[in-house]
Image 1: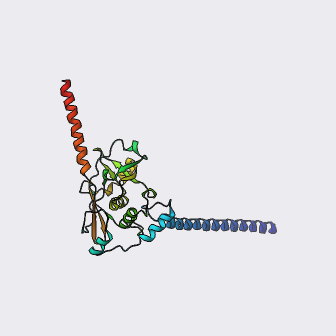
Image 2: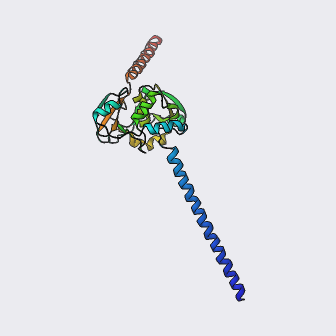
Image 3: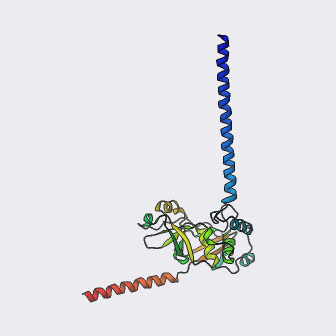
Length: 256
C-alpha cells in the first residue's frame, strides 16, 4: 500500500515537473520569437517613408539621411539648394485641430483603389510636419534630395493615402511623403490609394491647415520650410466650370 502511494506521488511529481518544463520551454520560444520579430522590424521597417521592397535603396537612403536635426539659417539654405520651396520662416508650435471638411459620399466606394494623381491636386491636412521621421532615421529634405538626384525611386515608397471632400478637393494623411515629393521638384504624378471614411475620421486630428490645404511648413529645428501646391490649375478648373455653366445656360435659352 505504501509503495503504491509512493508510486502515485512520484507519478504526479513527474507529471507536474514535465508540465513546468514544457511551460518554461514555450515561454522561452515565445520570447525568442518576439525578440526575432522586433529585430526584423528594426532592420527592415525603418520608416513608412521608405519601402523595404528594395533593401539596397533603404540601406543607401539610411546612410544618406543620418543628418543632424538642427541647422543655422545659412546651413539650412545650403541644404535646400536646388529644392522646391517658397521661403524660410521661424518655427511655430503645432497648429490646433480645426473642423474636418465633409467627406465625399463616394469615398467608401473608392476605398482601396490605387490612383496616380497630379501632385498639385493634393491638399495638405496638416499645417506643418516634422522634417524627421518618427524613428529619427530619415528626413523629408534628404529624401527629397535623393529623389531629385535619382537615388530614390518613388515607386519603392508606399503609396500615400488620400480622400476626397464633398467639394471635390483631394487631401492626404501622409504629409512627410508628399512633402518630400513636392520639395524634390521632380515629381509630377504621385502614387496614391483611396482611403475609407473610417480611416479619414480616425486621422481627423491632423486637420489643422489654415491655408485651405495649399501650404505647409516643414519644421527643421527652430526654422520652418514653406512648401505650397500650384493653385493656378484651380483657377483653370473654376474657369472651365464657369464655361460649362454658360454653355448649359445658352442651351437652355435656345431650347426656350
